[in-house]
Every structure is written in C-alpha cells, then in structure tokens.
Image (cartoon, rainbow, N blue to C red; front, side, top):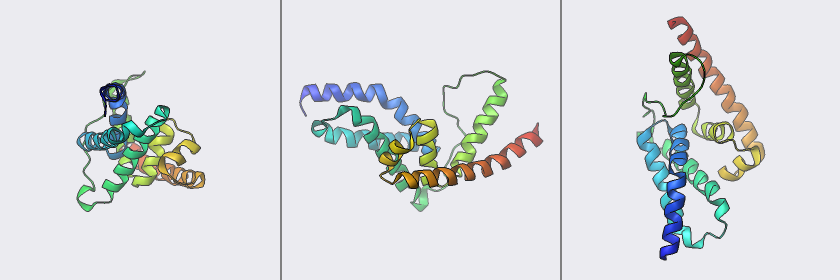
Length: 172
C-alpha cells in the first residue's frame, strides 16, 4: 500500500473505530470481544484497501464483517455466556439516572439472551438504523429472512424484557 492509501485508511479508522466498537459490543456484550471483532473488521478492510473502489460502501463492509465474526464466534462453545455487567459509555437523556441505568441494563441483558442471528438483525435494524434492504445486504440474506428474524428477535426480546422488568419492578 502506498503512503496516500495508508493515510486514507488511518483517517477512516480514526473516524469509525468508536462506532464499530459500540456495534460490536451490542452484538456480543463484552468490551474485550468487541475490540477483537472491531479489529477483525479493520484488518479485513486494511488488507483490501487498495482494491476498494467504492469508499462509500466501507461502513457496510465493516458492519458485515463485524456481524459475521460475531455470529461465528458465538457458535464456538468456549465463547458462550461470557458477558460482563459493564454498560456502554455515553448515555444521555431525561429522567432519573438510576432508572435509566436499570432500564439500559435490562435491555442489554435481554439482548444478550436473544439468539446471535436475531440479535444481529435487531442491532442493525434498531440500533444502527438500517432498513430491511440494507440489513439483508449486510447479512447476505433475503429481506424475508430479515423480516422473520426481526419478528422472532423482537418476540424473544419482549419475553426476556418481560421477565427482567418484572424483576426490576419487584425490586423497587
């Protein structure tokens, strides 16, 4: 890679590393694994940087790489159920801080219990803001699969949240 390509990659990396890391965390629930997943994605982009003609598609490529790596990792037996109790940084909003933290913790806990492929669809659709077509493209599946995985994932998330929110209500 020539110096100009290295500089362009470095600028892209600096601009996107935090967002990619947050997406990876939402997929796997562990900051250390999120770092690994983000690194995997950026290494893949770096290897192909000189071949990439459509620089507008970089975010989609990185996102797809993170999602695929997360799903692949979740299938390995030694990677199951290794979530931490740490919450992502940078939340803002109205209301009582304790309540916001409790709701956020409940949401993240419930999301961790959703199957990996459904979790990936939910993260891409609702937290990354992708539409059905973009999510299907990122996951290399049909739009119908995205819709069915979204419905199943939301059902699983509602089930998990119902149990967790009941626990939160009884604790307060």
